[in-house]
Image (cartoon, rainbow, N blue to C red; front, side, top):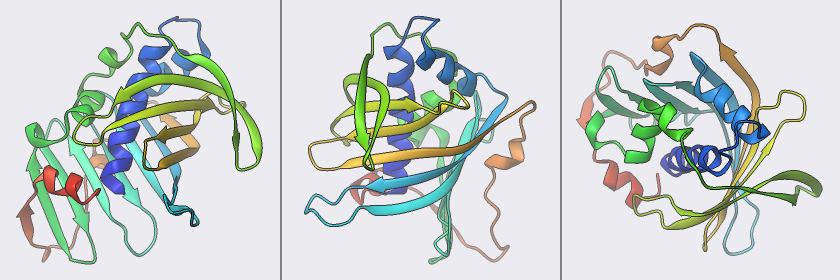
Length: 226
């Protein structure tokens, strides 16, 4: 679920920005604030639907994003799984404390949508397609947002439709719904912080000195859905 989330967020951010090309659109303004900040960080709550009708799979974590350089996602709790990309260091790292091992791949091997979101935030804001206003029921409450045209998430994840809403208080992204033919991933952002100065150390994964290192093949993660 970890890699699916990060790929979905990358695709959603790119599609949101391109779908609201009008500089006056609240959606574009919200994404611009995140994509042009020296660093942005937020808590996230993930809910992935069960295709067989059971309760959704729920996960909480935190994301750090340094536009132009990289990003890191950490799962809360005992699992503590982390995924990090750092353009300057030229690496993609994955850490699973339960194994434990620190997996590493070259920057060029990371999924292309993640690399673009990290390295080229200005490109994300240069789209020309349009989003349409749409209200949806989320957890029993009607929420205003924008529906985006279907787009391929790439990297063997198939096609998905995207819907985004903004937090009425902060004006920043609050809910991102990524729906495929199989299931739906709802990402809720809580407590955005836009820093005035980037902290590159936030992209690092700290592990015990005795932790072994191993090569990472991102395609294997996608095959196992992360």
